[in-house]
Image 1: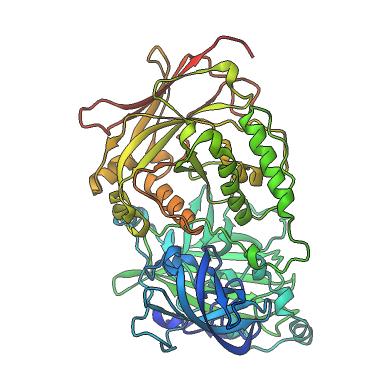
Image 2: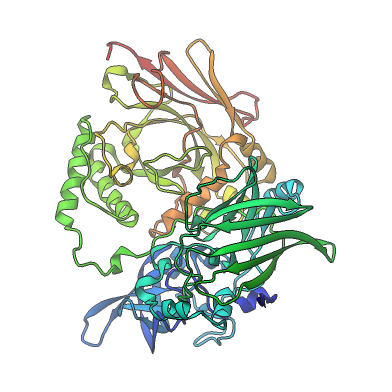
Length: 633
């Protein structure tokens, strides 16, 4: 058996070596040319997406001709945020240097960027700065103390969040091993620019277990879930009776058992062609034996992980690897939201016809404004494009529905995901013409067939400082009020296989909104705790409680604000004082009419949302919608 131990390396040293993500490291010779290029120009747009951040650099040559370059960072947005960066910090005049991509000759893998404010980003801890003495350094992840404390109390053995493993050398170590004859043939046939599945935001076992990012191990009923950051990969270890005919997958089928406090896992049925993005081949006969155990070292728990890989088609003998991780209580496993190609630089033979897309958006706007059932949306767009066209949709709605006064988001609550929402969340604009006065009445006969009443929750932005805020309390300090909020979305539309893109372009079908009296708040821990535990209810005209619930079982409001702010900034938008931020439904939605997936029709004449524990006088904060039932539908 060939044994290779992944040695413990300080975090700062990790990033001086190859990082395996999307296009790989920006120093990866399989994906980047040896040509070193230096450019100067203006960053006019930022693509703040996983697997790594990208930017559009506009360069003007001596003749005055413009050309656009894609700049590719090695780090992903979350790591750049740990350096104190946000997307808008990159906009402006910069100097850059790096290697030209083999995939796209107008793309540069960044090694250096001198930013507009004089700071310099350098790829790799072992590389010196090129222009500035003010170098950016990555800081440890900022974790809310209350979140860390809560997880520390619940941690039990292997069950907790774990920090980055002790060294990202799995792919490199595989380059040193011997192959069977067939393994060598398969490795020689590897074409990195066509066979590397990470170029398509895909990953698999066992390489995923050596991703240089945190990992979580959690109970999932009787089974065990292993949560990995990159590409939202989840493994499930089945602790009961194994399936005699399991399906193959990119992470295989795992069966576990306990040997004292050590978890033993056997994995088979792996349908993933490579052990790494350097082309080490993997056959369908691969089998893994893994151990997970916690050992006390210097009074602290340390996760010891080991894997034995047996693949007789590829390797002449089993391979053994081991690594360690330390606890990272309170780490937030955010949706990875990977976008493989930035559409602005995609190598496409058939670009979308903008005139056709604009016509489809105009037709959608016309249907919506005139109360007609919205027809299917034919253009096939990326999510990035869909949000660009949402801006166009808002401009088309503007003459009838007013100026932008805020933003809304959804999809952050637990439970089954809305099939028409992108993974991780969705956002849209709030327009002034959507708003009715608190307590206003709507006529049943004016509602679309799929319209519904939605209890919601909103904040008001108090300071532009929210755009640079890092901690939960700093974000809260950038808000000055809670606003009772209710909506009447109108998703009345014909069936459409392109429903998610239609929902984004269509501004989430937002039609009517009502806001109650704002409740002033302060950026304190007491207020943060109060908001996270807030109770609320919906009552009818007789004061009867239709449903009561608590925010503690739904979503953390500041997490939704953070997501919304970051998503807007990735499109070059900052929040402004006075804007409203609607954070998504509170789980008490009621349809006007029966026959929809939202259940029975709401038959009461009032829909009043009450929020408890916010006002100093002890009274609930409220927002009310009255319903005039003058005709049957």
